[in-house]
Image (tube, rainbow, N blue to C red; front, side):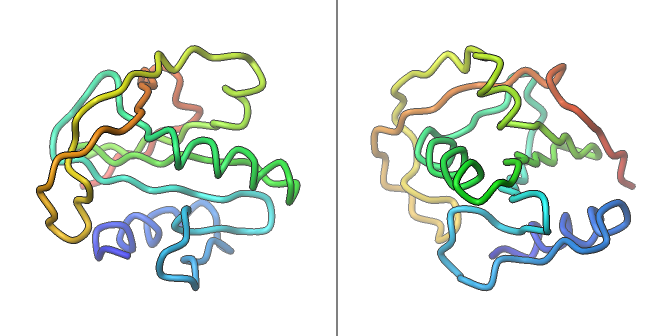
Length: 134
């Protein structure tokens, strides 16, 4: 897990005391507590419509259902952290506008190889909670 994601977890702990980083390095979500799983993204730019990868979405929606948890997607852009209740959006039939795009294989390991990924978008107005950071 990246240092930036751990910093976001530390900020979230101000609101969710029991949140813990995932123990498994290659898990498809970054943290969890008794009620929720959290996938965390730190973006270098602001986007009104933030991306979510379909493979993370589909796995985490199913995992959350199987283990009676809520899938929270956490996106930090500039000085704001946005929390999206993906489980709720899924149940409401939210349109993520899934598309196939050519993107970097991974930002984690600086791998710039381009591959096709299925990605959707979530408008920041769908955030259930926002946190302002310094």
